[in-house]
Image 1 (cartoon, rainbow, N blue to C red):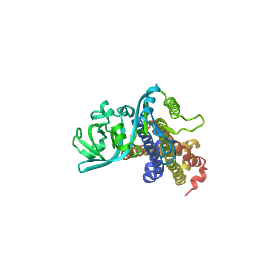
Image 2 (image 1 turned 120 degrees about the vertical axis):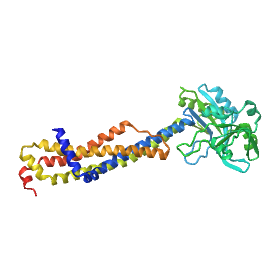
Image 3 (image 1 turned 90 degrees about the vertical axis):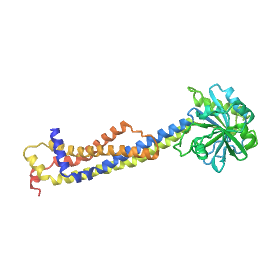
Image 4 (image 1 turned 90 degrees about the horizontal axis):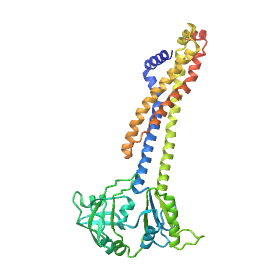
Length: 403
């Protein structure tokens, strides 16, 4: 009986193909929109996670000043760090893998007639280990260069491309204001993050060179602390805060005059934001499914009215109410499943297109596809039941009299 009901449903659907297509269009749009939104949202979340992982998921960043909401004012009214703080963190905290100082300033790198605005960071050899980045060509800083404050530099790929094009920068000199730095290496390309930040637009120089010839003091504006694998960053952060409070002589009832950022917490916040946005957009898109269900109910009511005499004849020759109910209910379910199938295919295509345009991974969830297909079937059951019940409860005599 079920196969016969399916055959009759398909015959009725294809007999009015255009009307059937317009009926299921709401389901198609709803399912496609949900799949596309969730797929792009999951791809964005994955991209954020990967970008934060590039910065270092086991990475802590310490800055002077209290953490502030809104525009950063860290460092205002607070004493800067120094190299003794860096050494103390490395030596006194057992869970630390690498500790690196960093001073950063926006400057213009000049090579002949070419110039490029970039960020110049003064640091040492530990920076590469703490940030998990590598030298692609050339070499890193030698200990003698760090000790004497030599005028050497490492270029990010963007700076290399802007100044040298396809040329080889190794051994050539780049000017940073009054400093002529010899290029000793080019960093491995990292690309653009999901935040729109170019992660290759930087120049690294020895921190002593930065302090002597750019900042004019021995301050350290930021310390990167890489935690060993298997060590909790929460515990490392707590130990780091205790050490810094002790070194900066902060009393028990006094607030910290420094702040520690945990990249895992930042990653959790960012992925939480993308998840909430994905959920909201998916909820809005799911409204189309409700509209599609109402459309199916409407067209099924029209179909019942159009086929009143046919229903009357079937009932008069002995068809049971359950058989008539099954016929129209199956027709509604088939309509919604066709819409669900078309919506899944459209949603996958739109998701792939969106991921390509936004440059995020294509993260299709198989459970989402199954859920969308099941939900479309539920739409057919819920919105098809009332018209099917109305058809099944018709009086055969009144149905046969219908014109």
